[in-house]
Structure formats: C-alpha cells, structure tokens
Length: 218
Image: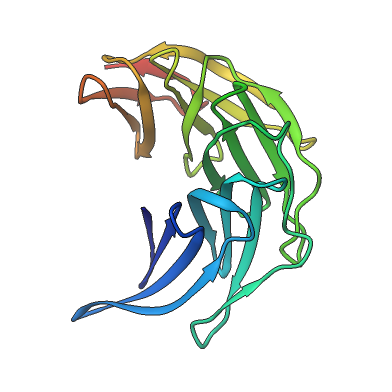
C-alpha cells in the first residue's frame, strides 16, 4: 500500500484490492472518508494537485484514472481520465503532477519510457507523448518547484533531470548522474538539493540542484 499526504488529507492506493482510499488527518489520527475502485488493476502510485487526484494502474487496458475531491470529502471519478501508456506491459512506477498542475507524467519501468500528458480544465487528459528516458528503468519521479523533472533510474543506479516542453516532449538537462547505490528507486527535491534512495544498498545520495536543473552529486 502506498500513502501520499496532501494538506489535511492522506491518500492510499492498495494494489491488492485495486482501490484508492481517502483519509482525513486530524488530531486523533486518520479517519477514513471514502474508498473507491481505481478503474484498473494493481494501482501503484497516486498524486494530487488542488482537488484533482490521479492514480497509475499496472493492470488493465488503461493505466491512469482521475478523481475530483469534493468539498464534502468524497471522490468523484472523472470521465475520459482513463488513458493508456505506450503499451499494455509498461509496469508504471510513479505518477506526478507538474507544480502548476498543467502536466501529468508517468514513468514506465519495463519500457524505459516517460509519458507526458496535458491536463484539461475539466481534469481529463490528452493522449500521452511518449519519451525515451535517459537511463534504464525510470522509477521514481518528482518535480522541483521550478518545474524541472527529476527521475530516478533503478536499472542505471542514477538520477536524470529534464525540462518539460510545451509539446510534452522532454529535454534532458543532466543525464544519468550516478547515485551511491544500486536500484535507485525514489528521488525528491529539497531546496537547492535533491535526494535519492537506493533499495538494494539502503543508501541515500545527495545532489546539488542547480537553478537550471543540472545535478551534481555531493
């Protein structure tokens, strides 16, 4: 089960039951508000921007599904939010919104691709623009506040950074900056730095994150 926290809400996807759960975070802990099917099998990642929520499903023909968070704490499925990735057997890793919510990206571990969608005002998605990742098995992904996309590469043991273009293509800024361990799974920006974790070696790599999105290992 994967959890994500946003403001006073907690989101969780459960691959076993193929559901998305919404919790309220209060002084007593967590209170379950609602659980919805994710419109596909084995959800592995969830992201949120304002009241818009998207999940990435491993199983099924369509790999994305979107929901609106209503003011009374209910999840409403968005029609036309289900989109395929580059093929059926992509094994998505992470789904993430750009800082302004206008773009949605999904990493494909099996194919070493990164899909970029445009997000319409009604919350639906465009068809994906499929980009080749710089390294092997792109897994974790997160955006710096500047809009630079950081992607960890489990197969390469590295992190790459990209700019997201208006046409949803990606331009590499730093290609395959090595991490301190194998199976680099997650990456997150923090101010002028970025940090990546390696599953096999249980290590954390630190990078200096330049203003232009370039990465330098510390």
